[in-house]
Figure (cartoon, rainbow, N blue to C red):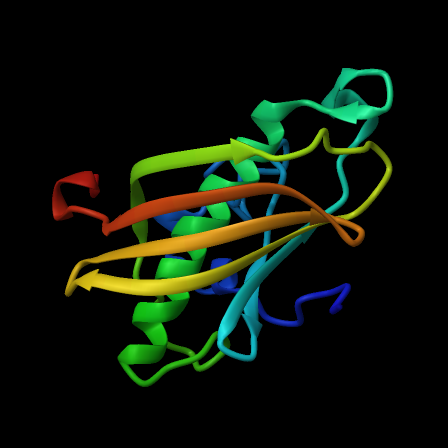
Length: 159
């Protein structure tokens, strides 16, 4: 298990699109999730903070949904970036995605004070759309299975 992602896809997002509460590197108040490759799968590792408690000892499901959401869009960006011949850190602007759908199945309660690891498998379903099949583990325990459908950010999202 990698504990640190040296260069995440979020590091390559254009500054205008790096303010997401979940994964924006320029949002100092946000989670700043970071997504990278681990072989042919994507990974995001995050340790919940005490304020992410649902009930004592367990993580709030909304945080997990945010983790899965940003992991999904970051994974889609990684997949398209690689398809275009790049990896994070290649000094190429990364494609930006938005969430088209988010489906989460909570398998087991997620314990607090344990690093969470989201592992994704990208599946291209359209030239501008990817499905990311994700599992979230707390230690060795599978807590969540999810599917994010991510679409290339429309040009109308620019300022």
